[in-house]
Length: 175
Image 1: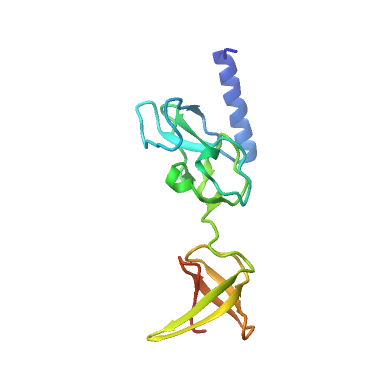
Image 2: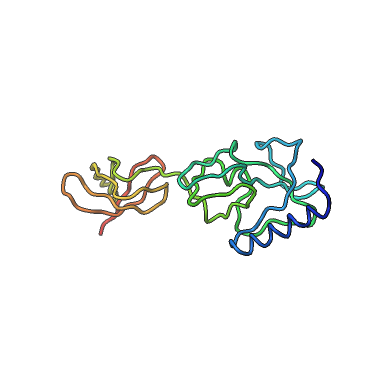
């Protein structure tokens, strides 16, 4: 089936109206047939190359490159600010909200994967100078590395706040 310029223009008008109604930005783009989704070029003569979802990605789902499609933006079109469009920005991240096919992915709609889950048993550490105290606690909320989370000390029942470390332990501070 061939598309005529009139139909393409009508499609674009419809997409823009839907974008205005829904508050999202369509990714007017054409697929880059000779590029794989794992090899990304930041700029080509035909236009900027970006990644967009090729299928619906649901909240809580880990984003992998197989769920993304590489497209080359039409010459003169530029991606909006605050959207993630490169493999290193998206691979392994988790969707915070539903991501629709053919749409840009707002940076605010993705997060790092949780390093500790809510209700998990973790080691907590208090370090002051040469003193190190460790205990076992249960997380009261999930968190990624660097996040501040609340934990309940299993022995005392006390609720503490601490920072999730890269190894999955929690470092608490004096309160």
